Length: 258
Image 1 (tube, rainbow, N blue to C red):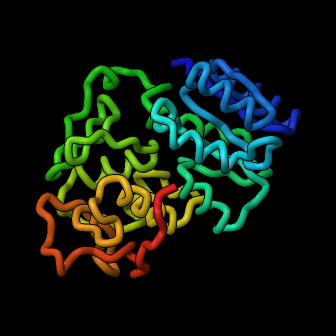
Image 2: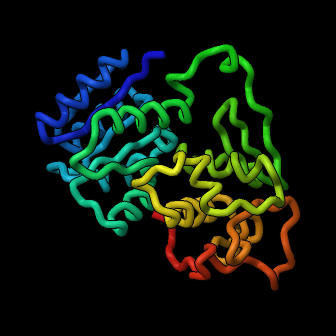
């Protein structure tokens, strides 16, 4: 299935390389070279995927990602971030701002296409086949509803905007309420043991989701930690004195939302 992809990359050679590979797979590609133009293009006609360089003039990729996640019409847009920065802190910052995947330069174009296909599948594009017409069942865990067919999440009668990575994490946990999933099990379902993604990625997704679905993200009672094991989504909230103080590492999440 043809998808519409916006590539925001200020390096002309890199942008052309990515364009050629995407077009070879049949996608409609728009290339822009700065963050301000990227935002204007996204608002003009939201694409199915944004491939976003971090270091760009006018508005950098991190700020573009932050703005995208704050706008209702773009909040669920899959974002693949490209950067010359390769430290784990840089990766976690990008994910914390809402990026769904993160690749360090230099990268393999084939690897990039594999990541793009994965994000498009999770976002509902580039799928097809006999199974595509059969919607997955709606998942309900307490006040939380996860609808894979519509790619919607509702909590306490309020619609929650999730990134594709956050949505997939909720879908995995909601498929087996009360079952504990280790980080390795969650990562396998999110990224297929992607060598660029670490187990701390799961913690970032969990912290971001808690800000969205918990009434008090610093004392989680729905998406809870089983210490030394992993995470689970519970149907019935634990007593207040047993509420979860933070991610599986034992750290308390003292950050506020963006």
